Length: 476
Image (cartoon, rainbow, N blue to C red):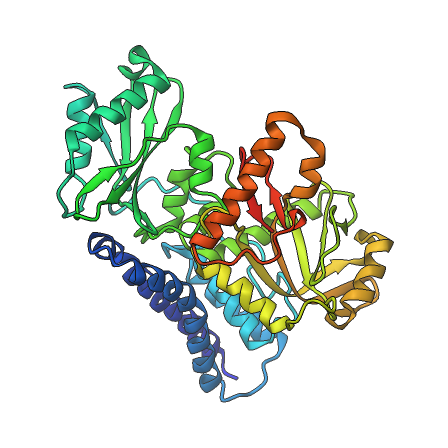
């Protein structure tokens, strides 16, 4: 193969990513119209469409590359040169970080998720971190209370792009000011100003105004969920100003936001100040860049596993009938493998289980189901697997294991946020905490059913709590 072919392949992959992200932005840009028209069915369809766009465009690029190479096999040196050419296209590319993830996806599709090494893939980014200081268009606008907070908030709400009338703007402004005064006090509030994102964050039936409450010594979130009444009028539902509240709104159990972000890295950097507890992976996930979030999540895992001396163990709790779950004691994720054989009372197949996981990703999770990341050919160092877990994996999921001597390869698994199984949590609490947990368990079942996600087995062991999340019970 000629040397010029490497550049052609690199350019084809990057052009494919441009096409994918262009369609991603196109679908996202329709969120305002869907909200204004109360077309909630279209909201759900757009969410599914946007998720499927990525894999669709990866497939298109793979077919192009097979035509370009005429199906000829490629040696290692050729693949390394392709990656080198691709890397050279990225220094001035505005979405370089997601473009690297797209390259990884194309490679994995071409080579069936095999030979996944740092030399061939962007396991780590090839580019230095870039602070986004100079942008073609500012991400946010500052508002100062020179004429009082009532005037400031009136200007903020009037500047919104929404084309519907307000139900009672003066009433909502009064509620917001009262909420701010209660949270900060009038004296401190007088020293603050607002910085408001230029784009609204759409999710389900709400348009979220996302901003920062800038104080002399700190910055707090400023979040307003804006709803549309049945009469087609706008109203503000509440005003959220704590990091804990913002963390839940941008949480791993929520659907992805539809927010127009031509420069997603810049938006992630801007959000980080009001979401200090969120990882880079979680922030990309929240704005809908779930495939790059998977890359960042894997990097977080590698950062942890290379610096710890822990061994993988079976996760605490009652062993499941369908999934084998393991974890690292100090890591906040769990690894889930579909068993080779299910308990007799479970009349389903592995394909059905995978379809259920995909359904959850595409559905409104109403804050009650965690998002997952799906991996193929996941490599583990045998020395880091506790003997009891290794024996369990071999017995329960042996068909998914390949033994490479010092390593094992798991052909398919899911990674998701670790939670305390509700049955274990209920053993640890009493009094009001116990009553709150049981009430939240009931709320979770009701909300999942209302969102048309049947909660399945409603045993305590199938639900869990994430300790940093106050009060919440989620379906495992």
